Image (cartoon, rainbow, N blue to C red):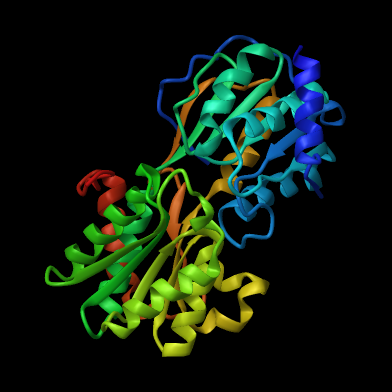
Length: 349
């Protein structure tokens, strides 16, 4: 029956083929002696979130980790894309395609895979799974790779407040979920720490279960234009590919944008708008993906939660373009205080 479901899922999806060091939280449950796996025998499958490779943000960061492993170890890889508006059943079938195809190291990119993975993982005890951005699916063969997005967002909030001339800032979130709210909360906290009278206008592009807010640049542009017209002069986009529209609006209005996940100033596809990208909140998904692959290769896989926070280098802010050079010392002071625990950044409103 599992084979029949797989075949049906493959036909429905058309297979959709296309071509961030961390600190352990101590909740892992692996720990048993494992044999290392020769790189030549590693088969790695990666299931993207909506937007896929080429989104210039979250998915591309995961892809960089995969590409690094392929370049260094020569591993066999397979990538599958997500579709807009798909169901949990479709995500489940995608993960099963990889597991049934002999890909014994599988990475699910994004919390949207949690429900599907919780169903799939128990059926493939020999497969090591990584779930990015969620602890909602747990098991002896699942490693949960999560980040302290609120800490990195605090730093770019400081930068935004110090650079703003109006004291009015904006936050554009892709989808209104607890994960993206962590970005908003951290950004607002950082802005108010640097300038207590700063205000932050917030706009989410879509509400669950509509996840197209992560891949709709037109909506991002419209939201940012409304903010800029209301006096906002710096907008932080935590919206995946939709952030490209925020940068386009900033360019047209002579304002500033803040990127997310990757150092977006340095991405070739954003070359035309790079001059308005003041900084980016870097979320090192690439490091997490690479670390996971290495752990399987070296026989050191550990199930459970692995947290990539500021102290561990899992999140940070970028300085590319030199726009924050004059305030770097102030940002780094906050960075040191967060890393030492002197400042604790909430992840919830």
